[in-house]
Length: 265
Ligand code: APR
Figure 1 (spheres, rainbow, N blue to C red):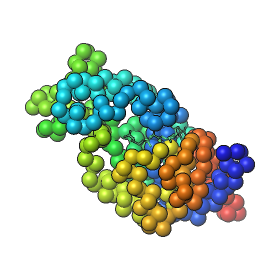
Figure 2: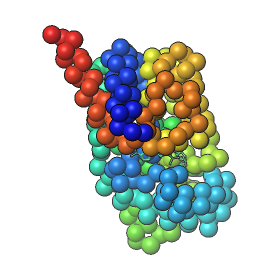
Figure 3: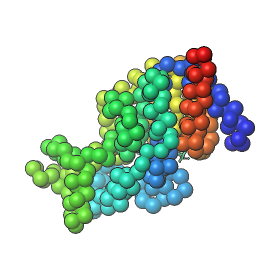
């Protein structure tokens, strides 16, 4: 997208944001790549390095070898996630909250960066769970991910529950694992109530998460997509801004602030 078209698009979206009162922001891994966390489907992304089939929920449950592969990948990503610093896109979303315009963030990400940036837990709906905790799938005992990392670094290949010996898994949602019922229901409800739905950094190819923009449209919301590449929903969008989330979001919120300042005079 050339600069002139992008700037025109940013002007259009900033006008829409000024007029909006219930903005739902929907984020994918692309909002965190500028924090050093690889996404999944871009060239060099996680699914280039690891085979997603190895991480199907049923395989994780049924085979210790799969659990070992899973924990090896999760352990390799641990410090990338823990050390990741929030970026301009995360900040800009918090600014929307400060303006009283953000209804909530619906995220597919497990990195806790929206909360690290300053959004309260009740403003973030984590559709695919979080990597901050580890649960026993049998007795539901909860462990911090740090505790389990300590065990992995001491040589444990597959951790099991201290109390019941059950299988431990990070509180994330793997392919084939049931979606969190309450979060999914609430995300649909909030999407339908939004007057503006902004997608940031998602390929919008994973269901049912990728239904949310459609629910928003059905509820009458305007749809804006900010992404480095095309998505299957671009033709449904009012505006599509192709480019880096951090730069675009920073520019957008800056323009919204200028308009609001001018209107106050
Ligand atoms: N700015 C804007 N867009 C970006 C940036 C960036 N800095 N970096 C990457 N992107 C875009 C990519 O072009 C891609 O279209 O973000 C999108 C990320 O898409 P995916 O890697 O598919 O990630 P996501 O949409 O979050 O995947 C959804 O799939 O594997 C599962 O559970 C996993 O939650 C994940 C789900």
